[in-house]
Image (tube, rainbow, N blue to C red; front, side, top):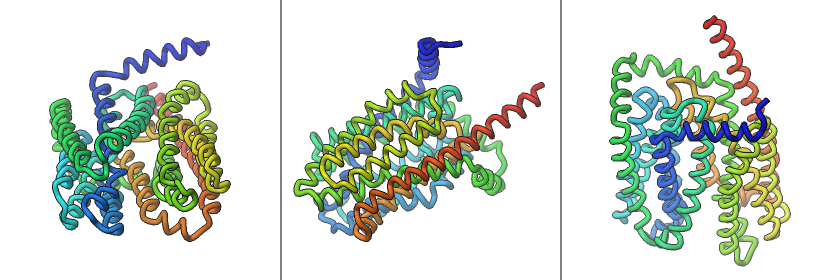
Amino acid sequence: MVDRREELALSRIRLQHGLTPQVTMLLGIALLSAATFYMVQPFFVIYFREALGFSVSQSGLLVALPFLPAILFGLLGGYISDRIGVLRSYTLGLLIYGLSVGAISFLNQFIYILILMIVSGFAVSVMSGGIQSVITLVSVSEHRARLQNYLYWINNVGALLGLLVASELLRAGHSNVPIILLGVTRVAMFLLFASLFWKRISSEKMRHEARPSARSLMVPVFKAALSDKALLLTTLSVFLLTVMESQLDSTIPLYFTEHFSNGVVLFGPIVAITTVMVVIGQPIALRLFSYKDATIVFSIGALCTGGGLALGGMVGSVWSWVVGMVLYSIGEALWAIKLNDQLSSLPTEGNTALYFATFATAQNLSFFIGISLGSLVYHSVQASVLFGSMIVIAVIVSVSFALAFKIHQESTVSMNAVKNDYGS
């Protein structure tokens, strides 16, 4: 029987083998992508309001608008990406997104910026599952779960770096420099991808030309995806987890500004605490709980996240929010490692981008609802009721994930049995 030390040594060897030069390059690109994105996205409202002088409603519309095409055409974008090639569509999306967002930094008329924000939303739908799909494409199956966890961790590191650099050095929200950097970075990533994966992109083109027409394949592909119960239940888990996460961008800032005299000053450090704790906690959780029961670890994490929000909102003191956000962060570090394992194992051959686009669409829909309806819901019910409901959501998430995990495991065992029978 392999002891714990041998198990960890084998795990490190497997990870080293998985970190090929291409994969390492992709993880570096992911860090740069996340950092530049978070230099801009959280400050867009301030930029439109303060630097360009748009009204509150106009600024809110511009920020929310890109979510609509990403939601409406996300699944279609994933399907098309699988048909024409994940690398081709992602590379094209980088160029369109970089040019559209970068151009915003040189404009000050509402209508032109509105059009470019819509275009950026379409670019997101073309990019489908994004770099998650690309990582899956260029790595072998035994490394994908861990690499998806590293990708999740890198996104949080990038978010922390982007927020700090933008707020401390680049006058984010009052200067167009971060927006220019975002645009230039995406165009540079387009050029890098085009050169790094030129042979793969060309081979994708040849495979596409040899396939039947996309129209004849669309109906059976979507039917197969909609009949995949593990996919649908996992997507529900992603949606509800994002509902809880979206409170940080919608209702919690409102709560702090209305309940504490120095709410804005308090909110920033508390959010920073959550990000730092997730960045520190996820690698620890990955080391300690990788081989533990997935449904138990995930459920504990989801309940900690929901319980942290409930503790802060129902008690209502500064310290209850500090403790609640610490609990929230510990929960995210736990459920994230098991969710990423599940996300990496679900996509079927030829439909990688469609599956990751399904998860991304669920996230976009949840954030859009949170941003556009968060204040309305907050002022319609008591804060204690709203934040207390996060416990109920956490329970539903846990049940949904457990069912998805069980169905997927049974399906995997069944498929392996069929392959063994066929092979024998």
